[in-house]
Length: 376
Image (cartoon, rainbow, N blue to C red; front, side, top):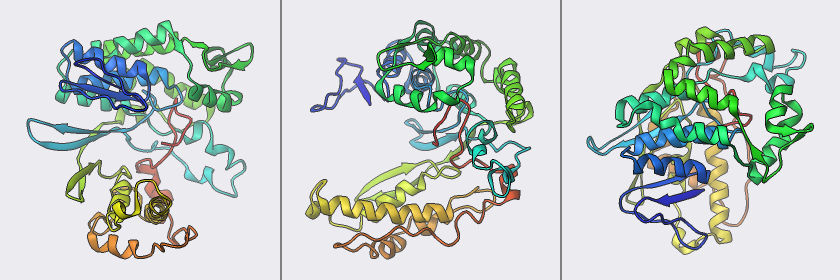
């Protein structure tokens, strides 16, 4: 993570966190952090900076979720003292046929990687929703850093190089010419230039998210999906909308902790905190064997709950009132033995709500997105 505060350009180090009084940006890449700082320094606000950071991460982390992906932004409106989130995950493609991912369909495991698993992208709609509701600067200015970095290139990090090496054999030939050379993937320290991506970002900056969701970039996505056997269509892209929702929260040792509500599975993080609140962590000691044992056991319990209850909230919403209650935390935490690790046991009713019918119109839960070879 790269964190820098605005006032004195103080960077975080392994021994000293960055601190600031007028502004701070923290992201997964220094160039994205710099993009946010430039926006703040030029009169933009935190929401403008968030869009600029996201757009630049689209460039410097090609394996993650950019314009062709989906995600969630949790925001705090200081004027209204309100926490809410914008969900750009959208819906699964209308023509999705989930049976292609199950036996006895031939190549059902192969179908879990590639075009068929791509869900409807929506991040650009989410960025635009935040900009329109809270931003100060013109939309076009938020993409200047991203376009510049894409055109001029940047040094590939060791992490990106590992992802490229892993995915490179599956890349189409034109992608191999961008992310590699002489038939080999780029290495750490090599320069990655993405002029086509810069051109796409420029069109988004000029025309807005509609250029993806029904415009020329959307036409290109739909054509590529059809050619490679994917389910995403131009109609899916046109129908995509960013949706605002209310945050969920718990009290953790006197502090209010917020997270996006469904359809995200962020409630699972709050559940872990709730379970951890049942233990005397001061007595255990920070990062001691006793501390880490409890965290590992809590993680198993929380993940079991996630497997059982995560689903499309329009079909079968998770029972958050119970999952985030002190009674549930007390009951679940009592299962943790101080002197031994329990085997992880998946719940008997895993994913029952995610049937063929609900998936057709449902929301994605961990599917991959265009330009995002990782589960998110």
